[in-house]
Image 1 (spheres, rainbow, N blue to C red):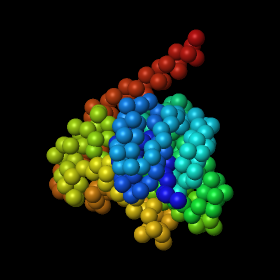
Image 2: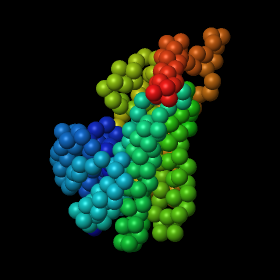
Image 3: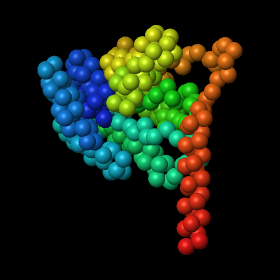
Length: 284
């Protein structure tokens, strides 16, 4: 019986890289995508060119019932599930706590934490029922470990996934199901908006290995952590960041500016506008 994997967010970048590397390792895969149908088809073609099967499901995983539906379809199509890779996420806009709204919290919580837990739970139930000693891998981020001034929500949720992994690993150890995180750092191309920044000399010089990562780097890490070679590893986080978060505070005589004057002014204006809007509604 061949190996199988379910990868959420498999239409581009990290998810696509993971799917292709796993196909090279002999996995049949099932992937989800939210809106990038062309990218999902590209992944499917790449996997099938390697002689493996690729099932594709359109799914908005922020909808509470969708993770279970996806895993039901994947289990039916694949026959069993050896590996669950929870990758689909929404980095959202990086902003200040001064500008927080309930809508932003709900959106990022649903896509970056609840989605992961529901996918993992559905996959684990099938693994237990089938007596499959499988593996669950959460794609987190080095932002779960290193704080940035405008990253309290996305980074905080990734940190929650990292911490949850440790408890889930204990929970599922009774069934010999291993649970780990892979935490990418700066990965090329990320999004079109971030691509120029990730390729800048400043970013490259900030990374000890002098380059940004790519989707294949993450795929190789997932393939390893899910393999028999890592059969004694559970409840841990494997960073794939070229050493990005190893350095401590910036050294030198120049003052470190964590927040630019332009950023501070824009956030201040946004926060004051929120106050004005609330006062106006109260007056009405």
